[in-house]
Length: 492
Image (cartoon, rainbow, N blue to C red; front, side, top):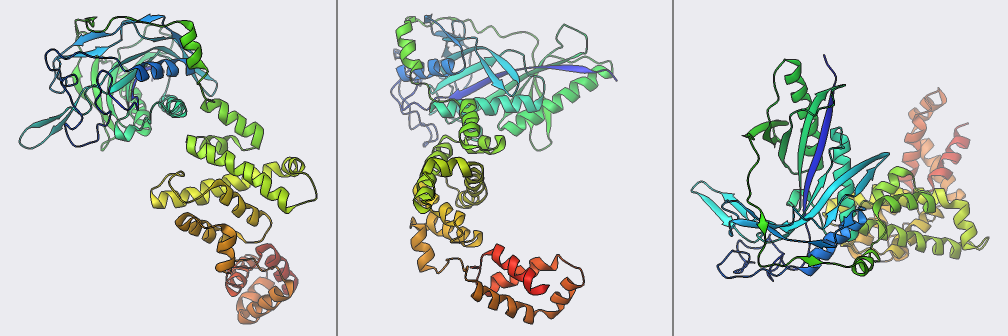
């Protein structure tokens, strides 16, 4: 069986979250009631004139700057002519021929994926098929849509999925797009071909559409590589076609054979003159660039001693990243207030890796679990970074144990109360008094003679059962480390 090399390029569309549409003043809200946000411009009425959305143009340039593109001194809109039920004008206003952003790149791991160009256009409406016919909703018609076209630098499904995910993080960090694939705010199309190893000429490509998740991007590519390779192994030809992804059967399916390219009869948009920009304007935009995801991940590792994986998870959302940094800042203050043996900086440097682990574990394991249960984001719950840091300080100082901390966190999210108040009113403070704990240990030993005999006979894993019984005896308030020590001493 021959070895085949995949060649993969991407066309990625994403909606800008401007308040109004691309060429009119209608609200850019296409999940509203059907045909609520429409006007003569976005419905293509005769005589209606388009007016470009300045915010959308500047945000497109901002994306280009973030990805290292060369920004055009001048770019023009043009008409892309074709007929489809959800295209009310009979043409789409786009900037494909003279795009505002040329070149650029996005790094994923040790691979650099080149960008061919980024252009700005308007979206079409949407269709709803019913048993009696097809309904047209034009709320989305005219929504500002950006298309990013890569070079054919991608080589497999995982790499392509990672590229799309990284781009999503960049867009969210810029606050220009939510880029939620499940909501249709980001749409990915894959151009893929395979060729025998050693052959320079690319194979015949297929275009894959209907990809609504990063997982689907990865699986569709892996399937298509396998499908095309098996065709070539069988001595058959790969035909140029558009294929869709069948999520249920986990396979690509043929939709339309492409015998030749469409003639869209592009010509300059007569109602919008060419737009010209100077370097000063671009310099002002560049000054607005925030810290990008790759830089933030590295800083989280260097500055806070997070692991690479924890840094990735904690910077996945701008809101989570901001909450994390604020909580860490508050934690430093809480710990220095409670421990006068050293300065805040000395305590931070001494305990930084352990504190980072404490923060990451309680965020990713406990807090994320509660957010998932409530179907909320971190900025939607009654939890401040200061209160979260106070809770972690109490855990760090062994004032409460992990079990009590979980109860406190849940109440904090539900009520917004301070953790110290909850610990007091709910009587959750950790029991460290050895006299009280020794008495509890003795009661557990006396009540469980069979398990004690098994432990003394060599079944040391029984110790965890006995620790659990002591925790139950103390209503979960005992210090597990102290209980472990006292049980070992009592069982010798």
